[in-house]
Length: 125
Image 1 (cartoon, rainbow, N blue to C red):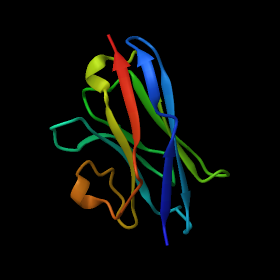
Image 2: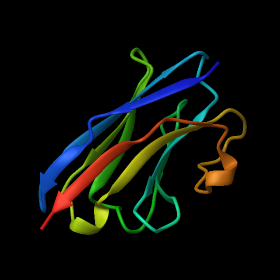
Image 3: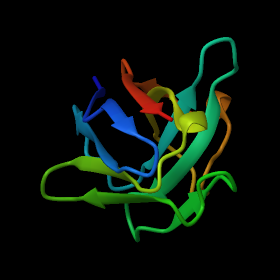
Image 4: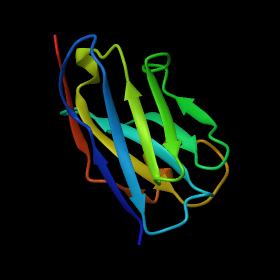
């Protein structure tokens, strides 16, 4: 059974940085697409970034492009989201997700099979 466990959230001032981690277990993830999503209070869950476990191709939402970087460490079975130049509007619960099949970089919550429990990121102004 696939398990995804996020960590690294916290409180940071605007302009600061955080690195989120998603530890994945229960499968060989070589054919998977991994994604980060976020959900702010009263809003729908939205796409942040995705990465192909094999090859490392990436895709970003326009709102984070140039500030956030998604990466993976094959040896540790871990996906990261490096977040720089954080803004108050980045405040949300951040979720890691995994999709087992397909070869694209998916950006819709309905396209993912597994989800982590989320980690809170709060950016103060």
